[in-house]
Length: 103
Image 1 (cartoon, rainbow, N blue to C red):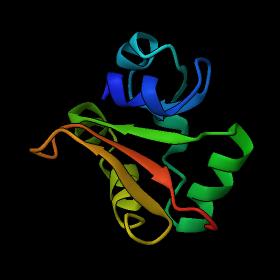
Image 2 (cartoon, rainbow, N blue to C red; image 1 turned 90 degrees about the vertical axis):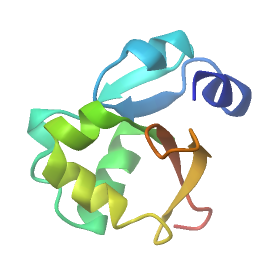
Image 3 (cartoon, rainbow, N blue to C red; image 1 turned 180 degrees about the horizontal axis):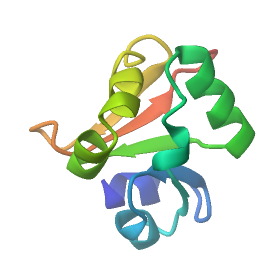
Image 4 (cartoon, one colour; image 1 turned 180 degrees about the vertical axis):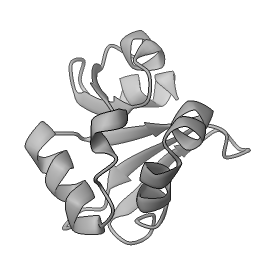
């Protein structure tokens, strides 16, 4: 995922995720997805937040899935409906989701 992010986005690109570690490794600007985002329940909520924060991708790992299950549920429903899987570790353990062009 780190290599994908480095090859796909310029350094300093806003990428959201639960924790910043891998995003720092990829030279991205982390945009945390914790606690205060539990209000996000709809596609509109998610994409409006992404637009406000200029988020270009979402880094999904077990931390996001386990610690923010409601948010993950909303995000997961947008795969194929405004979000595209740009990277998948092969087991689905780590994914990078990107906005589908035109969404």
